[in-house]
Picture 1 (tube, rainbow, N blue to C red):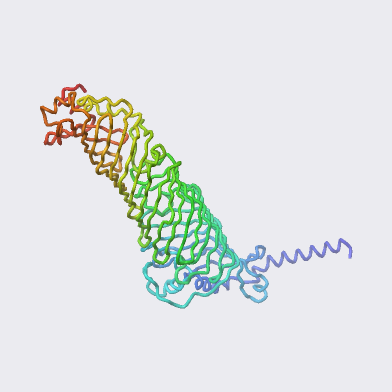
Picture 2 (cartoon, one colour; picture 1 turned 30 degrees about the vertical axis):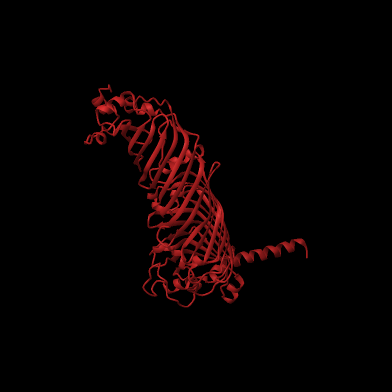
Length: 545
């Protein structure tokens, strides 16, 4: 046979194959399998599955379907749990053509929309996928139970086996009762050798709100038939530049914000989970009235979590800022809608120079142009309550630091002039101690004690509001009783005793105003002016404004 005849035969065979490929979609009516596919998929997932018309795609070796929808658990939502433009199903073509048998090898969802909903008790709507509970609560079976209720047992959903499952270019919307929905874009998933009894290797990647990135690489299974969220899983987790305020897992009213980078791992046997890793947060903000921290915060942690009891503990919590380290210990409870924590934060002799960049995160803003230089801080704080309304309480102590770039004498000129005090542009703080309460609504400082060598001992109490507004009542016990103050205190009741001076600190943290507490000193009600101290001092002492 010459070469020309061979080419002709090959051309004829190719043409026949092309014709067959073009005719097969008309000769094989795969749409008749649609009821079977819907029934089997619904049984496998325990959710009602609807599929558009099935079409044979010979060249790609499978079947395509349009308008895919998987119903949500009716106890959570009436909208679809998953909705996709199309589904590509990889099948064995020869059994399909000659035996009319449907053997599914791969499933690929194109451009799906997935809705995650957090219900009462902190339970998510995906928990019942593929479980007995989901099979029992399918639409039309019976009145749906509340998400937190334990479902009655029933026959297990049908077993299934898929060689490969993919999600391409998906969108995941996270719905939390305490915040608006947040969407994760460009979600891609690959899972292999899927069945209820197998361990499934998987990879997940997505763009988080705020242009961050999230990826997981691990294994999951076998499937927990009672609660899919308790399926064993082991995964490495990588997060890049995630905007904490936009995750959908934190209440915006908490004020918590920042950009998170994280590398860690998760390992769970379905009942107990262990997680550890290293997190870095830039521009951290911890209270509603706070501002972004000027330095990054690093957390090296490990934690245990009881998936059944929904509670856990921190087994390692090293918080690092520069070369400064503090220890975080305690436990947390996830049984409610928002996780509740009871933790301790301890730091001893931490350099002030490393810490002052964190002060804005707690709502502490130094006066404009001021800075702290030198010294150390010690804190023993308790963190209690739900994450969206966390309250931090406990004592702090600061030793041997300086407030530079802030002329306290100038700011207190009306008061300082009476006592003959001239502090200059640098104020030495030999000792500062207080019991703090830091909450979303602001900071409360009790039993505030300062030793300022240039002035004396200062005590008092006050608050810093969520808007950084100041409201402090203070009493200064001056180092000397001479000068103008010494003379006047013998003639009036302005001082509680010789050498003592009550005063107020008002306005804001960035622009504080120091006013004499005339009402307290004289035992009568006098309203201080809204701006400055010139008016009241001029009226009482004849000073020019």
